[in-house]
Length: 161
Image (cartoon, rainbow, N blue to C red; front, side):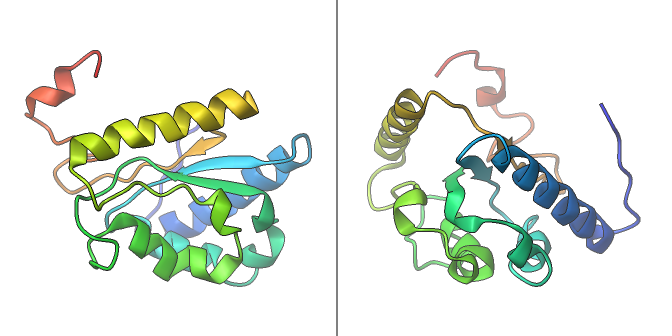
């Protein structure tokens, strides 16, 4: 494992953009698609801004990406708190990934139904492609939470869902 230390969030975002671009390009040299799970919350804003602009935007073959989410907030897509909306506003609307390769979580149904439906989307995709995620991006909140898993909640001790 390599540890990279950044002096601030700007430097961290720049390091991440460079690394992610390299991983995508290297992976696409040996396979025809790249499957990524995006993080929500405020962590990826700067990163998305970098990836959707020169030089990173031009270095990545965005048409070969399949995009999923690690988590989603139970709010309508139009709500500024919606993780997918943030990703579209800061990245996806700017890079030209085909819509049928962007796999949204439903927010128009109850959260438990949405989770079950997304599980089926994931199973179908990975069963059909025989692949797994090439990259999963995780943010971390000030309180140490990631993927809507907050410290001290009983769900963090679950071993199956």
